[in-house]
Length: 319
Length: 321
Image 1 (cartoon, each protein chain N blue to C red):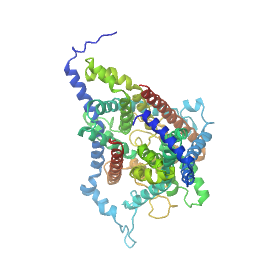
Image 2: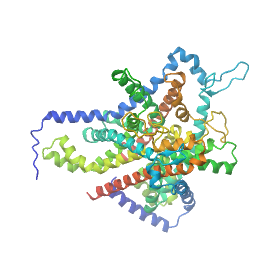
Image 3: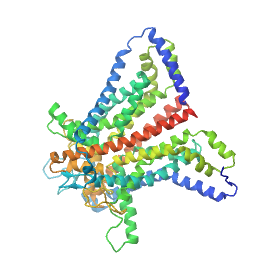
Image 4: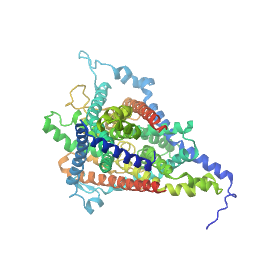
């Protein structure tokens, strides 16, 4: 056997090693910090630069504007027209619409499948469902975008007779497919976190399996299921490639789910490559990025907080 | 709860359920059927998507397709530059992300207590990093790596030339992806570290080894399959992301392969996006488009499958210890 002379190793090396590892461990913190700084930094000129403010102000991004004399005031996103118009309202409406359809589609399926997997499925069935969800989660979003652009859009149009081939419904459903794995995983995890002893106690008292699920497991796991939905919503708001390819990218304000939409993320992706570095349009796009960042940051913080509380309560430990 | 006691609990509750069911149950079937329907719909969706891609793409795949460049405005030829670019991109990303991710996991698991303030801050950062939308990473890559780091490098070393580093390049795209995949590597490595019995570390320390020696000769070799799993998952995730590389280095079409770190490159996912949305005649590019999607899908699934296999082997080993 090889012998090591441990004593002769200097303590200095040990110290350097530990500090080096500790510094590297700060990478994630540094990354979040830098993202925060650099996304916001590029949108600051929007509030300070007088040249940019001639073109766009917070007020003009928020409220209806009378773009041409004598015409009705309206919201309009046309950054490349002769009079650049930067109303964020059409983008907000588009983003919310897509996310809403995605959730309507993904929540029943994701939560339903999670309930089945956690409450009814036997071991073999569970070992079938898990890889299916993992495969679904493994599909790159550009492939989902491709599928909804080429296949799903034609199918939906011929089924429902949509005027526009690419519309909110098409993008929303494809987005839902991307959200299902998140909702499923978090909800299922929450339900399996509920201790077996709780179930057994209820079963021993004479409750049927479904009564146990409905009156014992589901109420206890409800915060976890809710946080799965919240985290899924965060993903739906931020997802880019699917909406960029499948939504039609027309900045329209309407309540109609058959109209085309333009989301915040797709706007950044479609327009950033063509803007002038440091110009008004550039700053607005980074401002949109800041909004996305803050929004998903808060959503994730909220979702993790609920999950952490749930685990602490039933397992006596934090995530 | 460890796996053994969970299995025992499963068996007990299985028995309880049987007794209850033998006693006669009411209203138990409808909810079961409804939730099973949700599962069936999800399975069907997956089958339709995979089936469509496979049927549309399998007859395009040939050695020629994989090894030749696009021709005639992407309506003919192959996708070799995109495959090459993707591999180069994820390799660079792996080199950047794995050491940092592993060291973060080591710090969290081997050096600090789980309830310390530092751990909480790092964990919060990891969780949030995992939730940042990929397009925001793209903005960050453009603003930080190209606009700040690259631009300042140019000002310092190449002030007499045009942009050398302050422009989209494969190094910036891979570093952007490295930040995006950092949580994946950390989480997988941590799981591996957790599966190593305490006794191994204690034995090593009791023999007089220092902490660093224990990590290097006992912990890391044991954690290797888990670290590999993390690296593979990161590669699979990175290979499928398009939004972060759109402005940081990916190109529509390049007649040459990337050779230097500041070259642009073609990439499979971006190639799919370009062909699907910018092609003048979608019907003509469709076969090649399907072929490219199939290649990307097979690539990511193979990677995921390998990672799942490695992980399940690792987990089964833990039970035996």
